[in-house]
Length: 115
Length: 113
Image (cartoon, rainbow over all chains, first blue to last red; front, side, top):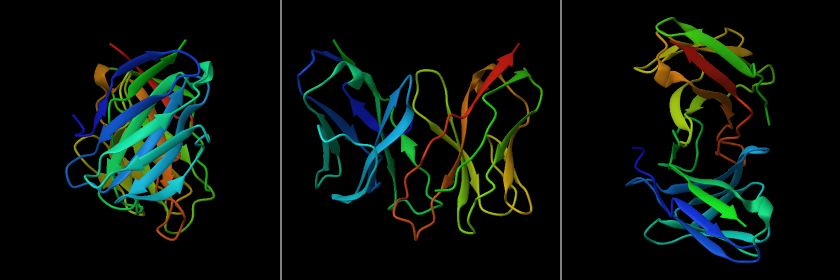
């Protein structure tokens, strides 16, 4: 158990809909990261927050957004869903901003299926 | 960003040592070398990391070449539970814009009983 909690574990929704994935980082961790893993793209970095502020942005679509709240939990919002958005979404956390030596801990992921 | 090159797959027998290679010829002086692994249907899991010297922990050892252009993850006695995809990642230096992990395709390790 990494200490990173993600909900829901599984989600099935229709195209055009909007979903919210939730992440609680490990106790004391200030950084939260979101990754998307699909069969053809592998693990893709989406976005990072540090203590409520956006720290880094990767291959995140404009239809997707995220935020980190004062209690440090984070939410990833996916809207206007398409079939290609079906993937496993991982949240991860680390103590610091992501300095080279910091370890990043991953949750078990949220399986999203868009039908 | 500096990139890594790993074999797509490797096979090992249970209870034998496994050496997983990684080439990173464009590594910069302050890039750390991280190894993560992903077991089936699970999130990636930290294995080990190092900068210049060889490193040991309870999971594995990391051997880093003197010129830092390559490294090897060593599992001393492979178990069936070690079957996973192993990722060698260069963690960007503090001066870079991002501290996140950039994953490549990794090496899929199969362990035979």
